[in-house]
Image (cartoon, rainbow, N blue to C red; front, side, top):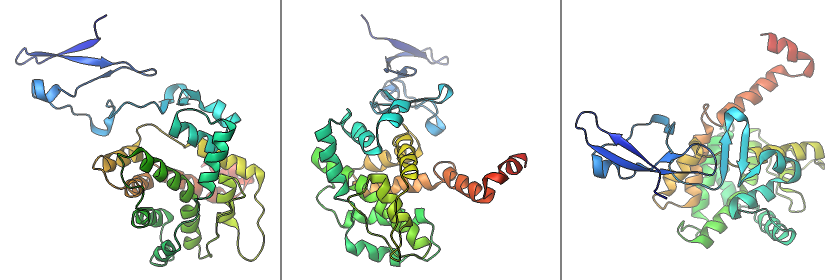
Length: 293
């Protein structure tokens, strides 16, 4: 069976070129234009990647019109109901849901890498009290490149795995510390006996003055939220990380660039506006009045 191709014809010169079609498991097929300039002298022009895939991927498929989201072929509804965030992280990293022993080992690795080097705390002191938490995260995550030198080679599978584990483990600690700095409260160290999301809630809301008990409802809600946001195809931050990584740059620096992209109001910054809206509403009793506006 011959390969599916499309023919592109220059109506000015009459010259034609056959371009191979790449069929995916889900979604529309793609036209491979990698030889277009070499054989026809043309570039493609597609601002915003609206009709362009930069790579093949087995991670995520989204069909917004149908409300469909798949991770490694699993429907998001199934994962949100039956899995936790670390299981989904394992799925995205390794291609399959973990067996009990695999999950136990993975969880142990993640929860025992939640601390960052004590010297990293000095970076927080350099930020103003009113610094935006995302600005702090861009700087602090990028600074990890200066502390962890055994996982910088993106072409080495072991290095990539170590970097991924560290990023998953330390990101809640850095996020919570960024938040605590912005509100003038002392940092709270992670607790490895808590769940991944329970630990984040602990670091966000505990204080040295009194014990903090994680609300299981909030813990589960945050876990599901993390599952929903675990991967979102070729969005702006993913593309930024990939572009930075294409030069062979350190993984921590690349992820820092992705955080900068995520900060934008047209991307993750939209979530911040939602939080501002919720603060403005203030109480359930004010919802109807707010919607009426």
